[in-house]
Image (cartoon, rainbow, N blue to C red; front, side, top):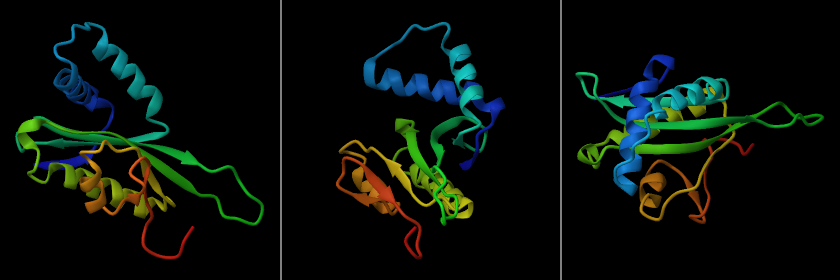
Length: 153
């Protein structure tokens, strides 16, 4: 299994994971336009969003996540800064509890640290709170926050 940044060529794999996630939660969905709508969304969002894809060694998609990037409004006397909102974290059921989610989060948090994001924010489900806490997020469990190590931003 490996994790890599998703790109435009991955829209079908990401869309398939989104369908699988939706059907896991709500049952079968018949939406013949979804792949095209997803590809259009991904193309629009790619300027302000980063995504990762987890795949088996033979290339089958088994997990994903993305983060919306925000640039703070400039402030006099302060350096510009950016932060990210983590969204759409999903791993197929048969690959859960095997480190796939952790590898996805490691890819995201490494990116956030390297890109100098001042924080990552997410809104967890009750079930996912321990997972995010293991990845370094803290908070009141309605909205969790992860700050990189070092001086506060």
